[in-house]
Image (cartoon, rainbow, N blue to C red; front, side, top):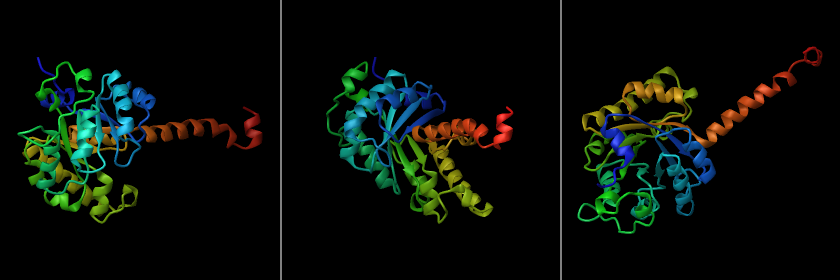
Length: 268
């Protein structure tokens, strides 16, 4: 019996995936984050510290806790995609995809001939998977990012591209490309509607072509809202954001007494 990618299997059952994001690539952080119960953990090579030298250790820690290792590659480069797959990624997130040709390029980098041009170099594959047939190594989630106005204009064609499993929205870059601030707190109500309409357009195109709609979320509350709207691949939290939020919250709790007047504090 061949290998089955748990992330693809989850989506095939109609179940959404809840993921975590790693800006760092520290395997200890990866292990602790994956132990929380996330379905997949993405190591970011585009705007994070992940690189080919660190991926294998991070992936190993993620796998140890039963989560699926994925990565965002720096660009739509077959060499970078192939190296990430050789190191054990079961899903690749490809940024800044704006056309069906670019989406097909990502698919081509994941598939072996005759379906693509991926070079055979499995590296960690035989160890981490139950079988070693060629089909097992092609059990990869191809996830392309739509995060520009041009990508939005072509999203229906991108979603129709053979081999694309999911489209993942980058809300900040999408906002900037639409002429908005990347910080939602800066938006007027009309600007918020423009952004939400764009996100709805991506989701509707995905649903029309049976592709998984995904989105990067700042926290679980936002992820819950998009889950209720029909998104099925959601990033719930990231490592550095969790460190900052937790640190600030505990510091605020400890400072509560310090910030009170000296006479009142002494009476406690």
